[in-house]
Image: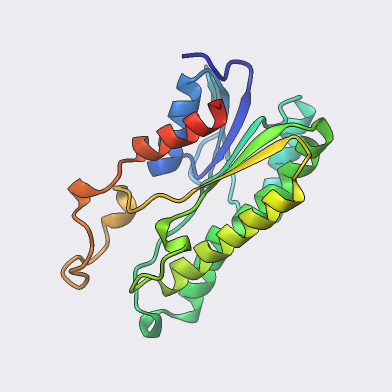
Length: 217
């Protein structure tokens, strides 16, 4: 499958879980994939460029965007995926934890858009995919901080969609339900008996397939 041959795709949070699956799926469809994550080691292999980047640090994100622009690799596909997850009742959530959820899940995507969008608008084409969550439109117990960040991300996406009307840039929000990734490893299931069983959850590959199908339309 080479439907994305010649396309440059930037995926944040691409070192594991959903982000890694998205990167692999887009690469399998022929895209030149740039993977961004804090834990990555700089390297370029066939089909991939790995760049360490903390999306909450504006300078780091801007440097990556400027480097790709100089290389003539303005993204055709930009996937805002990097995120963190916290399952904790509101009264047990510290202010520091609340801020961290907002910083990674909302401020980070904003900084990514600020860095990459100008060149995409100048070119007049591209596809921006936002990875949301069922928690961005359903209030679930224990999701005070996470839902606040994801509701905000949905709002950011909707404003982006309105502002990019008639620019040639397409926007897609994908809001999957619970997905079986390492984020669930530390969750105390005994203290949260209402959680779905991991074997019944979506798999990262399921979300990745949705992304690839969306950008290939």
